[in-house]
Image (cartoon, rainbow, N blue to C red; front, side, top):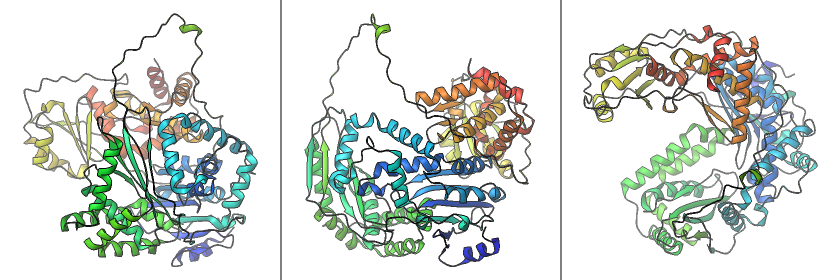
Length: 637
């Protein structure tokens, strides 16, 4: 084990460092908005760019394998339980996990970070089989989709035949070989905001069998311009346009970023565009819809004419300033800053920002000329004419018909090692009943500025809305339908503002309550959600299912996911309703609910207020397991 002092010294080295096992270590700049959080990004400098080598499908399998490993799930459970954020990513240049949580929770994930970078297919053959089955099942029906086949042809035209991946003949041994070639510790990185006590130097060295092309500036092999018109049965038409772009090491990538922001203003069709930051050349994508009644050829011609015009017409000062602000905002976003940091090239972002500040209208004209003169790939299709048709079907043979195939639920994973919550101080919680103002509006202390209009509209504001904004947004509603929430320190001012509110006394809407979970049981429903979220993480399907308690959905738990995964969640709810809840699971769920309370408090308070205008949100630590079981039973009735 590497001594904590040595790790601290390496952590403080400017520009990061490389450990003896090849793992690169970078420091994440401190978050000025939250000095008490800890952030870590761990993974490999390799990702779905492997599609250019004909192994894009294998990259997807490795990504699925890594996120299902015991260490990945242990980190996710720990971070989520502490109220943190979890993101598994697999983009063009990276595969890994990002965690952000309170600093007191750092010891819960430190050991798992090193374990995550030690995971290999050889150590977990069952997980490789599971990952292969999972990726195959996700893509089994996709190739039959017309849109998917069009997208595939578009990508092949830009990247070559290697962009087409086929997993039908892939075996676990192929995954192991691919991992050995591309996922050594010499491709691994750890970016952290503070030193770790369990250093990743303890990870055994593994050397990738293929060279790291991080700094290799190879180009996409230019191909002839292609304009392909496709006949389809799709009701919606579209024009896809793609062109090669350089990597973020080059000034021209940032010129494309500026041009992308300018196109959103100047092109009447408002195309949907994708420009990904990459370490190697890739392609820029643009898509415009073909409205019903028009042809793809007409829309394509108009689009090319507008792009061509941009090389002759100078952008106005206002357009250029708007594009510049948008591009800078993009590069200053947290996600993009972390992308540069985790790949060890933060200076490239700063250099790009400087270039963007210097770009002129003439530079934009030159970039437009580069687009027009580049090897464009255009794939388009016209919408099928809409025909109203009445189909009839006999139900006499319903029982004899074969059942439709259902999505397969992956087999259960091994239990996750649970790390106890370290000593920490949670904010004291005491909810007060809402206050009814003379204007008829109710006001209550909460975790954010928010306004709920019964029965199903809740809006959270970044700042306190002013009188004009209040009147414009809510003047059409009867005051008795409105619950206003605000942080305790702003409550007095908010009450003064809303005491002057003039609502609409002619509003005759009398909201009905949607959902079966009543006021007193809303906190128990929230704890039930925590239990289910933990099971989703442990089952490796955290990214596939979303559970929500939202005032817009009513007083219930909304389950968003495939039919198979929804059935799995319902089975868990039945199990919780019928079996005693282990004390450890109940205690974890209570604690996790406390840590997530701030994010959902406005929704919970809105739902309670719908049932009971004087209701309060109970202390979550006081909710007994029997009440959670009762709520689970009510839910499945």
